[in-house]
Amino acid sequence: MGNVLAFGDTDFSLALWVKTLPGATNEMYPLAKHASGYGGYLVGMNTGGVYGAPGKAWFYDIGAPGQQAFSTTDVNDGQWHQIVCVYRQGGQLGICVDGMPFEDLQQAPMNPVTAARFIVGGLDYGGNVQANFQGWIDDVQVYDHALKPHQVDYLFAHPSYVYFDEILPVTDGLRLWLRADEAVADGDQQPVAIWADRSGQALHVAQSDPAAQPRFIARALDWNPAVRFDGNDFLIRESVAGSSLMSTDAATVYVMARQDGADLYNTVLGWGYGDNRLFVHYTWGGWLIFQHGPPAAVGGGGSWLPPAGWNDAVHLVELKRESGLFSCLIDGADQGDQATVGTPNLAAVQPLLIGSDAYRLNDMTGDVFEILVYDRALSPTERAAVRDYFQERYYGMGGVVGVGSAPHLQPALAVAPNPFNPRTVVSFELSQAGEVAVAVHDVQGRLVRRLAAGAYGAGRHDIVWDGRDERGRAAGAGVYLVRLSAPQGDAVTRVVLIK
Image 1 (cartoon, rainbow, N blue to C red):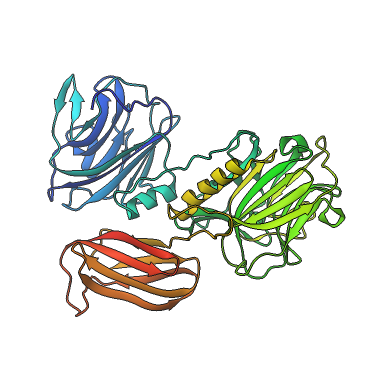
Image 2: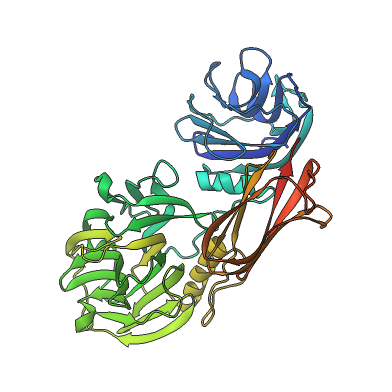
């Protein structure tokens, strides 16, 4: 492909599917952008000398033998495997085979920008291409950022899909941007010590007390992570100037969250106290409340009754202050305007909390996916663009959230292990209860096995497929399609049965 896809000491990722002949031992390079003696990067398999390891995949940029990231999984068994390699700034190499976790993390020299040809199925050695790969290569992807764990798992569970990190379309006036994939944790269900602000203002919130740390949930909604609060957790930044978050008479706030049950007091975001606040109460006494300046009780905020189906479901809340009015949209549906009085003191320096407020009486119980705070009132066109961003990121491409319409929640579907023998687990997650059907088909669309048919509640469900058909016979090795039909939509994923 010529001298393309060059990276220096900056984050990048490689993903590809490979299959070799069973027991292949020759040194192979399914992907390389590397010039011998000058550096670059490559994905290798097996070993031909001092580099690599028999049967393993390995990721190399520059350095001595042993400074590569090696897989622990054998990749020369004649089966399809997905290899994901991640480079992080500073020379850290990571490699995954067939999804997370990282099988090896290795510190290597920093990667230099190298003028080398990008080659699939070989290696540029001394200006000559060595085409030494024997087997099959599919779905080669190169990313200019470090894939996160939930993104790696998504790509493994969705062969031939591309993971798009949706771009926020409106950044003018953005003062705070918390998205769950920026929460610092050691993996799924692990405590969150820091939640990094993506806005560029560096208003990171943190929690040093392990007993008060929320948890990172890797797959809270269709492969999207969330930060989960249990009613005793919160993240805080002790000193934040009002001018860092807002202006005196205008603001736009977006919150993507889910509260557990019929909890009457849940604060998602809280800055300040007394007569100087920026609060979002997901519920307070049964009301959704937005405060910008004095308390809502004296006109410094708006309050709205949440719609039916509010509890235990994910909602996008859009709040705005403009021209003396507070407005609220829930899942794109207009909840009406309310008059406001008073303005915040921007010179005040007060604590900013996520999952609570300074009074610590209304701690959040539930999941928070994303928070955006703008210091101005976005235009109708800008607000529609931001809603489109949430729609695409969290609900797929099944339409745009608009006034009077609720988002269409695509059910999450995954199969693991994949490939498998003799059994695998089909996992699906529903945002609402209803009739569900799960079935396995061959690639011609013929029914192989019905796995589920009936009523299922909201949440995650796991079903085992033992690799047999409707008559109890062992299905043949090959590719199958698992199809899910649910009230909020359909989903399909590929699974490979090996022998």
